[in-house]
Image (cartoon, rainbow, N blue to C red; front, side):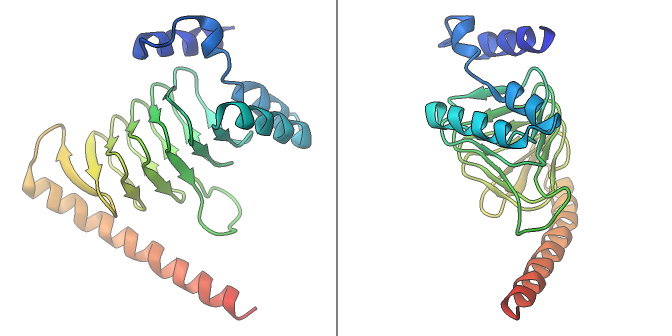
Length: 198
């Protein structure tokens, strides 16, 4: 019962529109995830698709979502199978935690504790959004986001570190992120070339 109570409490704390616990209980992912983990895969998918129809929130039953995660106005939210969302993270409507291609294994993002992902942000691939990081609305994130930074734009770039605009530190962080973005781009091109030859 602890997961439910903590999830209800975090929603009530962050969303003044959540008037009753019953409204909050409509988030049925926990049941789908339980079924998925116990090899009732078809039933888990059917259950999650039923709730997707009613809520317009699509969370794969395999996704790992900790207690105390806050999803505000979740319509259009999509969370992939190998995504991990840690305690205290906040996700808004239209967010995608998506994968790349048909790879196996970990292929969806990890959102660390206390991170905030704003409306319609797209986080693609097995990347990590660091603890207490912030992703701006509409950002497209294709490289790791270090903890306690703010990223915005397409592709997402660091604009704040520890809440401040420190140009030198931002430049150093971005150089490292660009390297990983370029590596990901090369891998995607290679995979596309390989699949086009099949």
